[in-house]
Every structure is written in structure tokens, then in C-alpha cells.
Length: 82
Image 1 (cartoon, helix red, strand yellow):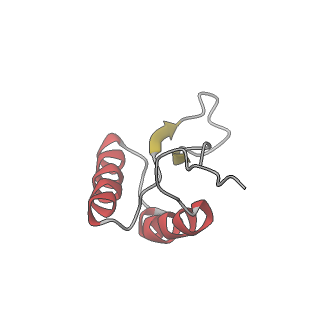
Image 2 (cartoon, rainbow, N blue to C red):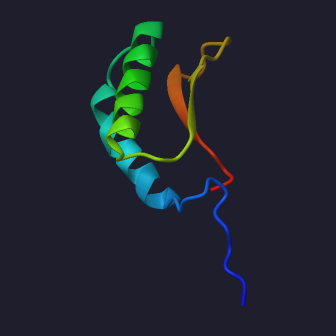
């Protein structure tokens, strides 16, 4: 019987961490999407990672629609290998 080895050498419960991140970022939902907001969100996520509340690798991307049909938003991309 073989045990599956975790990709990052430790088990990450993706659903729980995704829910934690969404709840954490709810306070920023009405702020305008700027580089300052991106930096603020990045710093907060890194602090939570430092505290051990988040262990999943992530990227933070600012999405802008050049046509202006859709609002700008920050997207947190969680690693799909987990």
C-alpha cells in the first residue's frame, strides 16, 4: 500500500484556505483597483502566510478590461497542483 506524497512536502487543504482568503479579502471589495490596493492585499496575504494561516502558493493579478465593459478586479490565483 503506497501513500500519496504531497507536492509541497506537506498537505494543504485547498478549499479551507480558499475560503479563508475570500473572507480575509471581503473588506477590500468596495475599494478602487489600484497598484496601492494590490500592494496592500499582497502584504496582508504574505503576513497571513508568515503567521501560518495560509500555506498554499498564490499569485495576485490585476485584471483590467480595455473595452470598459467589465469592472477591474484583483484575482488571487491559487496553485492548482495542490
